[in-house]
Image (cartoon, rainbow, N blue to C red):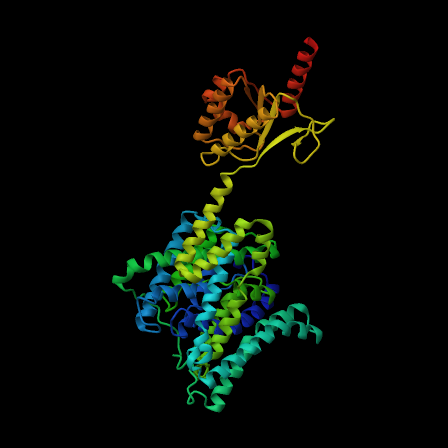
Length: 557
């Protein structure tokens, strides 16, 4: 805890202050926008940006992670609360805090029990599919706010503000950094300034609403924001624990995955190490802090964390400074925020989430592994057609199914010796030497209940194929160099292979058996009833033995 503070140096302060200020400018409009996505009053987004970063700074392991409201978790909250409380109501705020409480407790306990390995339960393509589907869902949900009403009855002043903001944000995102570079700004400064474009757009939209009195013309605005700090209290609804449990569990899972992704990518750039279990503790504490301060579930934001890093953040002090500046913003008169038009906020949400659509991963997956690409597309479709919670569950199922499917189809190579060497390679890829009555197989996987049937089927197919070509087989050598473990089913099946081959007058031999595997084999029936087979230390030794045996038999003839 606070290891970073004990090693803090004075030369880090300037970077942390600068990053804290820049992230605050980005966070104030973003947090209010994501509160709207969650179906909550905008001020709750500010409340969720005060204590959570402080709690994460105490327990988390990332030096530059920016913790606060995020688009995907906000969508999940809004979807979960839609049938339980009217959007923007006092009950919705209570339930959102209660959901953060449950998610925080789950994350905290997961950290205590060292369950950080769950980060591997969702593959990169499936995570990409979920994120892309959620981004499209969020963007489509903001169209009505952008236009001031449904497509059939657009409110012209609102649509003008919304579409103008959308166009300005798109132009800034697409061209501003390059334009600033051309004007002499450094790449780093240009990138940061381009990220702050939403602040300028919202300021201009707010000024337009105030000066032209567009609120009187029907443009919806944020409205009065209560000044002052949130009360530290815990309000819960006893009758809603059960309906909140499943969505809170899924939100906790998504919080960890999203935060881990952001933290890991930035840690690699900084040459640092992320400790998964400390991340769980930090995120759990952040969500508990949000629950008692009028906020909702929070997570590490990929975009804000990237800005925090690019702006020069060295330690979590940058996030502490951001929290302090938001406190200051709530203590001064907040009338200026009340004029902020909802169509402009909708435009910032749309531009932000459309940037989360990950076509690059889809292209890579399509070229590399079509099953990954199919899982990505299926997950995105699941989010769009079935819903967010169902999309998370579908993503986990698809990730696990992909792992099981691949594990059940191990790579098995028929190998031979590269001439003049002791190296053995796949006969289909290299010019190698083989022996007529010897079949050498290298199994490139551990042997367990899910793949042993495939190994048996492949061996039977090879033996029938050799017989059909008129090749007799007297010995089968299993090269075990890639086998690190064998479960009980694997041992049983090896015994069955041994017995079946013996009935065909074929001997089963093993080579390059690893120590832990040999320990298990020594206690099995396989080595006690080898039925004529041998265990060779190396494949080269086995090949030499069978070569000499063939030579002796040829000489005798």
